[in-house]
Length: 235
Image (cartoon, rainbow, N blue to C red; front, side):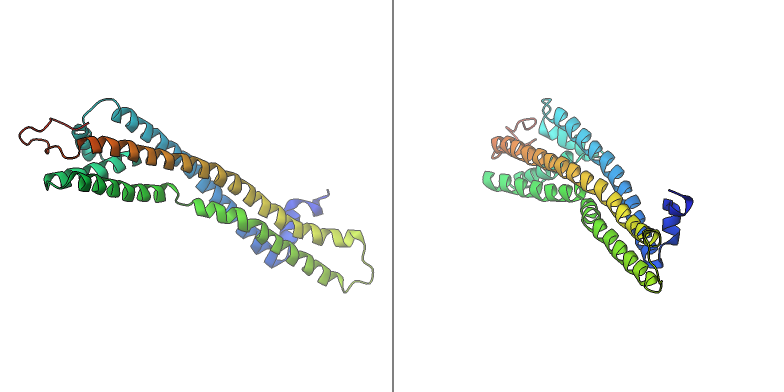
């Protein structure tokens, strides 16, 4: 490849529309890589924090102590917030001397609402990767079609057309498709990886809600902590 057929030359010699398409694709690629690295480290922190809380939860501490500990923490894990919302609603209904079934249902509804909020946070920006992965090839193809059309319009005024005169225009247009694929492939791979990781986190949330609900069911109907004849803590 000589200097006139280098990637840089092809980009600089492309038509304005194709250059705009290329610039947009490069911007989408850079943004998607920013999202990918942010999501990679963010999901790793979520998994680590959840695992730490689960070890503490099953260590044997009373639920009352754990609820006080979580309430005093500034930075909590998603599982801790789900636990805190369920425990808070459970204790609130217990203080009102509500029926055991009402206590359990209220706690489960509170945890489900918290679960949905936490899942929305974990899934944030995932749709952007899906959009980049599905749209970028078509945007690049649009740039290619436009570039080829522009090249053939320019060649229509020539008396003699050879491969040497056609090749540069077609090569300029094909660069847009290449950039589109460069933006799409990492986004698709990352989306599939993160979707699988988020599914595992969602299963972890649901398993914890069920296990915690079983514990609350055993404690439903007992007197509030601190009242005569009540236990010192729940478990």
